[in-house]
Amino acid sequence: MPTHSEPAVVVGIDGSSASFGALAWAALEAELRRAPMRLVYAVGAPVDSGPAVSAVFDRAAMRAEGEAILRTAEKTVRATVERPDDLDIETTVADPPPALVLVDHSEGALMIVVGTTGCDATGRTLLGSVSDFLAHHAHCPVAVVPQTTDVDPGRPPGPVVVGVDGSADCVRAIDTAFDEAARRRTNLVAVTVWSELFRYVSRDEIAERAQAVQSECLAGHSEQYPDIEVVRVVDEDLPARRLLEEADRGRLLVVGARGNGGFAGTTLGSVVRAVLHGAATPVIVARPRA
Image (spheres, rainbow, N blue to C red):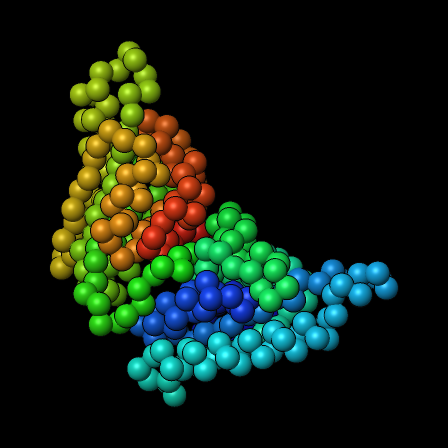
């Protein structure tokens, strides 16, 4: 469990190239925030291993493998950041399955970061399925980083894209998106999509309501972040498709964990999984902190 007094950026490591890609992104995020890091490897062996299970799960060997992977991970982090000596890094090997371990470590964390896919040396698929679980159960924001992510710190920053549907969760996503845009010194794209779900309401009226919902959700943020240019997108489209399209032109996509009666039925919760598995750019699911 956590030992740092400051909230840490927690990274799930399984030894795959996908998890190491997420690790490099997380290292730069930790440096940007001047936050410590915690690198977590989950063995995934059953808690009570009988003789038959022990033949498959050599716990001692798997823990040794995990410790070796974490040593490599720590070296990777220090080679990635500009000020390696200033970064506090903790490593942890745990026995339970990855999803449970990482939810545990998300409590009190600043952010938890995983890759979109990943298999360890034994062929166990780990992080690809864990990202879905964390998006629904983590106690802090969850960042899911595709393997194709360009982590070059010298690359000009693209915009931060945020989904706006009028739900309580989207308010948290907007707060997160403005904070991320301010840290990156870039602009923000707010996306609200609608569809003609109710035939007794005209398309023009739905569009007007969508504009009003977005304006209401963004109210006050421009005063709080006067240097951030906000590009407003309000259109008739499928939520996941439009968010992914806008994210392709950005550097980060932020969504709420779920929608609660969002605008015209386009609740973000219904598209989070599609976004997590379809995005070519990192996605932050703005989960509430414990």
